[in-house]
Image 1 (tube, rainbow, N blue to C red):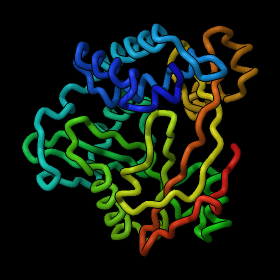
Image 2 (image 1 turned 60 degrees about the vertical axis):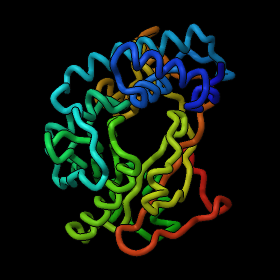
Image 3 (image 1 turned 180 degrees about the vertical axis):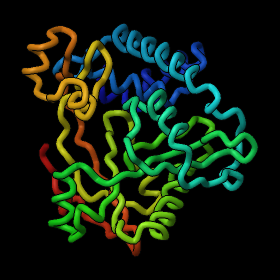
Length: 292
């Protein structure tokens, strides 16, 4: 199997994920993302994997997800509701959002100081879809936006986390994004633009953003995924824990406990949405490919 194969939900990988999710009692979509995040750790330079390797990563991810779901059991939605019945909540509970993002989001951490929004069910008040919004910290993206689109970095905020439970009705995320935009326009006159990064290596396409009238404005070259003790760690987490993201330094300090992916990864896509007015379409030939 290849990493490209596994990104296709209709592939053998998708079938294995559904079987494992049913056996463990976890959500298939969250399991697929977690497994896709960790498959590059064991894939060769050409992105190839054996079926045994794929099955082992799915099983390991399913066990971890089951344990994590138990830690936020009170927040896992129990009912199924139509989109029009969900209640939009601005300033959603920071503690509850942090619990969901820390235990269920594939990055396994919340963005400190973020504003949190959610669609909650009207009966139990449990989150169905939620997101966090915080000032853009990615300087390379901010500089390109300022240069090409004349929006200063101080006026750009980032959709830094999104999580949607499998019971979410169709279009829940795009509806949530539209409500977030309206709320930001009403409450934050200093915010001109919203951005987000979409990682296609995890099976994400950006369709919810396009449905909410966002546009892809640029791409950014992928860098290897990094892992500590067989678990993915983001550059932010590495800096917080080890004060460095330098591969050579981490390898020297931690030997076999630190790994990085070897296979070629797909570029991330940067989607943007103007808080006021129409977000312009940028033809692919005018979209800059940024380097990290």
